[in-house]
Length: 171
Image (cartoon, rainbow, N blue to C red):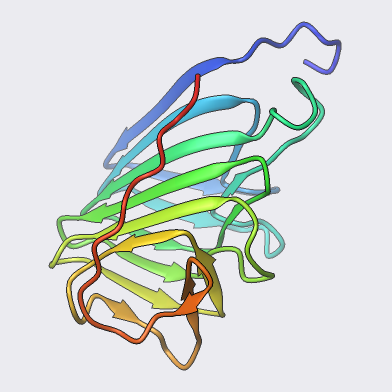
């Protein structure tokens, strides 16, 4: 609602199997709320070439400066194609486990909101552009730079194991 009656709060989305096709915009857009997204072995297609997989950003709802999205996206046995963006008042925790694969970039235009990425030893992130995150937990070999640079808290990631810290949501 753009009428000013939208309230802040908690939300959740879970998908186990099945398929989802997005025709217009971003697949997930989170604003002015704390959201848990859980994906398990779902087929997700984005038919909008300008849309991203996940955008956490301020929009027309809530109080300016504190109306970003706070997202924890947990993917199990999941393929994710597309970018993930978090603006300066938003945060994302991306948890990849059980053979998940993320092909995309995180904030490819530069550092903005806080982003934590965690991969278990069976999952993989293949970069599609330079990416900017705040923190990283991974095993050696789970991040494929693919010719790009991954910046973790402003420093270029050189490969190897990393131990980071998730971002706490503020309700």
